[in-house]
Length: 430
Image 1 (cartoon, rainbow, N blue to C red):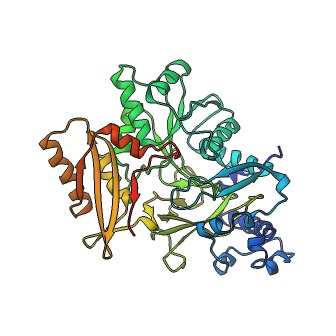
Image 2 (cartoon, rainbow, N blue to C red):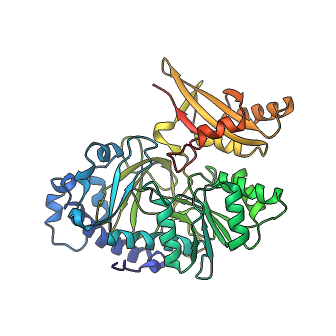
C-alpha cells in the first residue's frame, strides 16, 4: 500500500505556509476531479492549467456538490479505472438513498493518516489500547477508519464492535483498554453499567466520541459530556466526519473545537444562498476533501449546520476549528413560531439522568410543525414527569407533545439493525 505523505506538522506552520500548501494541493485535487465524468466539463479549463497552485478563492466560483448529485448518478464521480478500487463503502442513507464511495489503495492510506492525525491530537500514543465499540461490517467506513487510524498511531486495537454493554464490560475487564471509541450516549450506558457492577473503569485516558455532539452552541460541555467525565474519569473528545468527506474534524486535548489536517480538506460555512459566511457565523458545512483519488468531491454540501472559529488554540495549531454540529439543515423545526434543531431537544433530555431512552417524532399540518417526544424513565413518578416537562419548556421555550414509553419498546425503535447510529429523530413531515 503506498504511503500517504506525512504532513501532520503543517497545522503548526505559519498561516501563509499553510495557505501556499493548500493552494498547491487544491490545484492537484481539481486535476483529479476533472478525471470523473461528473466534473469533467465543469473543470475542463482548469484541468488544462499548468499552474502548480490555484488561489483558494477559486473555490467560490465553482459549483457545489450535493448528496442528491451522488444519489442521481453515483458512478459518474469515479475518477479512476474501476480496477484501482480496493474498498467500497456505503453511506448510512440516514437522510436519503445510500450511496457508494470507492477508495483506492492510496485513499485507504489517506484514511489511516487522517484518523492518526486526529487520534494523536487527543493524546493517543503507541502504548495505548483502543477499544472500538462501532461496527466494522455492513459496508460502513467509520469502524474501519478508526481501526486503521489507531494502528497507524502504533496503538493496539480491540475490535469489540457493536455489542451489548455486558459484552463490552467483559472485554474491558479482560483487555484493559486505555482509549474507547463510541457513541456518547452508549458510552454513558456502558459507564453506568460498570459502576452498578461495582467495577468503576480504571486506566481510561480518553473517550473519542462519534455521532452525537459533546458541546452546546457556546462550546460549553453538555450534561452528557460532564457525566461521561465523571463515569470514566477521562476526557471526552468530539470527532466529526462522513463517508463522503473522509476528512475528520477532531478535538485536540484543549477540547475547543474540531481540528482537521490542513492537507486533507478545505471547509467553508455557507448561508442558504450559498454565500460564504464569516468566522463565528452559523451556516451549512461544505467540505472539499483534498487528496482523494477514487471519488474526489468538490465543495460537498454536508447538510450539517455549524460554524468556524479562528481564535488561537492552546495546542499551537494555526488552522480554524469547527464548532459543534448544531443540527441538519433539513431537520430544522419551527414549532409554534419557535425555531430549533432536534439536537436542542437531545441536550435537554441528556441533562436528566433519569431519562434512559428517547425518540423524537416530527409531523406537519398546513405548514406548521409538531414535535412529539417519547421518553422512558428509570422511575416514572408525577414529580419526574414535571421535571421533564419543565426542562423541555425551559430549553425550547415552547411546549411539545410528551409520552412516557417502556424502554424496551423505545430501544427497538432507536437501535435499528440496519443503522450504525441510534436513530433518535423521525422526520414524518410532508
